[in-house]
Amino acid sequence: MSHSSLLLRYSPTTHLSAPSPSENKRKNDELLESGLAKTKRLELKQKCSDLIVLGLPWKTTEQELREYFEPFGEVLMAQVKKDPKSGQSKGFGFIRFGSFESQMRVLSQRHMIDGRWCDVKIPNSRSMEGQQHQVPCKVFVGRCSDDITPDDLRDYFGQFGEVTDVFIPKPFRAFAFVTFLNPDVAQSLCGEDHIIKNTSVLVSNAAPKTDHAARHGFGRGHLRDAGRPGMGGYGPAQHGYGSQGMNGGWGGQHQSGRGTEMPNLAALGTSLGIGGSMGQGGHQGMAGGQGPNPAQMGVGALNLGLNPLAVAAALNQAGWGLLSNLPGQSPDTPMAYSQAGPAPASQAAQGPPSMAPSSQAGGGPAGGSFLNWMNQGAGAGGDAGMPQPPGSQPPGAGAGWPQRSDQKPTGAAYNRNPTYDV
DNA sequence: GTTGAGCGTT
Image (cartoon, rainbow, N blue to C red; front, side, top):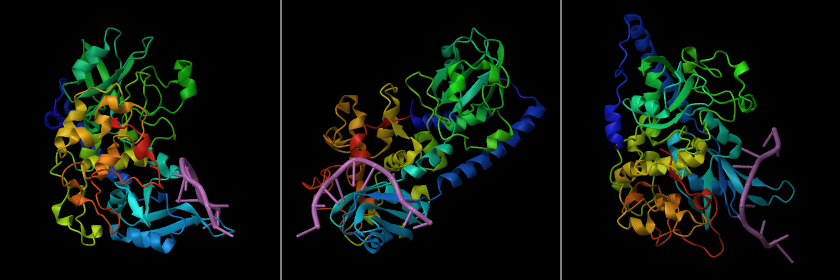
């Protein structure tokens, strides 16, 4: 199924069980609420944070660092970490942008600074924060009867949107988890009663996993009620996208080996507004060797000139888990995006290696990487939309990463084998 | 005066 058809099919009002008038009112409230939550989600997601710049030349000064990044937008802070005694640079620094758009733009590519390729990332000290704002794709299904199978749940909930995972604890505990591709679908179902196999089940928010120790021992005793493990449920808790813990969050894996609770491209599409608009690469207007001025590019995801795949990759490395190693993913979903994006003419040669499961070996730079491919413009002409400060685009770039003899490939771009986490 | 994966004295 294509992504677009999924979105078209999604309707918050499509439910089998007829809601009572009072339920309808509540439903309206919830829709309102969900809108607010969505807004908040957006705000949370668009907060700037400091960015770490790895791989700086020893000689690069803070002034030079700032000057390099200024074409991307207002630079609020630029610092090069140095040894206090010698004053010698440690080879990395931090920058802070005034706008999220600038941040995204910078995160989505590598940077040639003073002759070295540098990686810009969300620093580890901050990367967990993003995970607290993840959108729950998973719902809790309470009051399950013991004759409801995973397939039953998959079939039933499949009418609302693509189901990416189903989990029924064993031994039987009268509840289950269903994960949707689209977090909006998941949210739209929360608080509703549904009838499956003549059983009325209650759908509510899946609580973040916070207490691994308790779960380990099948800690039924500490559950607040038999139908609701952990905290959350629906209601006021819907306001809170931030999970309490730094670990777990919304990303329970259920030991199923194909965890899909992380935010995905569908979430991106709905919350950043880029879904279904993957056109022909970047803005041609940015092409040309002139000094780019990314700050003048339109704001709003649709006008960012960002390749959605690039955004996904950026968010991924920003700790939002959009891409991950999921060897067990269904084979059809990635294609929905690979088709939507600009198809590289020579995709076999320079497409994201992760598209091909066979390219997992080693995880080295051989054959490039997703980010690699992305930064080449993700295909013909795609990099026209990427700001390329003077000097950042070496001659011949686009045919592959420049491989400097004195600089080995660094960072996640080479260590990962991202596959689409959708 | 060297180095090249990492993660921020305040």
